[in-house]
Image 1: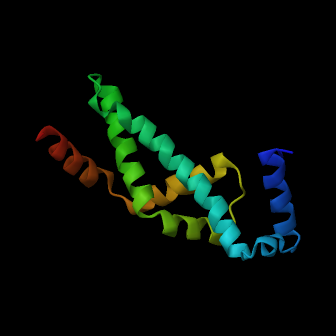
Image 2 (image 1 turned 120 degrees about the horizontal axis):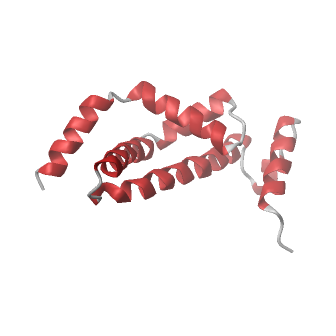
Length: 128
């Protein structure tokens, strides 16, 4: 019988917050389970950014700029994935995509100087 993924996620969240160690049933620690769950959210966000970055070759300047920002963000998220997951765990961010994306975007904004990155990316892109 297939279970509803959302109800399983809510159930896991309930047991973790209640102090139950549901993760030990599979031999995982609570930290392993949290890393896996937050990792899935981070991976999905990276996929969203990569999908936007596919418009990099667009003739429309507006789409090109958005794609460039998405490419830089996807690269940042991918290279800092472990750190971002640890940050989400330490902040105990609720398992809602919009809340997690808020924290990811904030961490990105704190860590990246956009002008330098965009200038380097633009130079690399125009040299090809």
